Length: 182
Image (cartoon, rainbow, N blue to C red):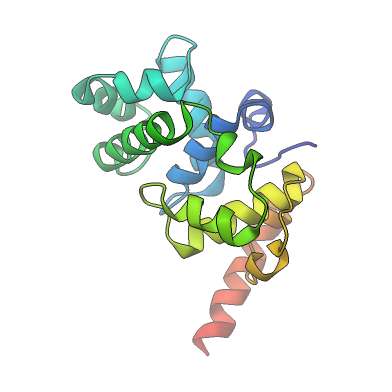
């Protein structure tokens, strides 16, 4: 499996190898470009001294974490809100899954169960749950019974298989949005 959500090889490798980094990237994936959102976990890891795990982020002083998000260049266009969101996501993973993000999906039997678990993550509604399930199915081989009914039916990161697909996705999303508007 190879992930091509950013132009940074190190960030893509982190997403491939670290379930928590993937969840953080998905949490950051709103109102900013795909590449910036998914580079966020790598930047966060670097700014936290090379450590990126749910317990560390959950236990970081909120003001310190916000400062890390605000450092130029900011991790997200809404650094204060996304620092809080990332901390809430991290605390959820600590509380519900003992800090192991892969436990969100590792033992599920059905897609309904996985979607319910994903929607329980702070900031993950139906859209983000479906997007996450699609990424897990198509990039990580996580395919619980009934998963196909939840696959995104819109152009998304689920379709990125090679580096050039990221640019193609932007074109397809723009065309899809234009077609929906009319």
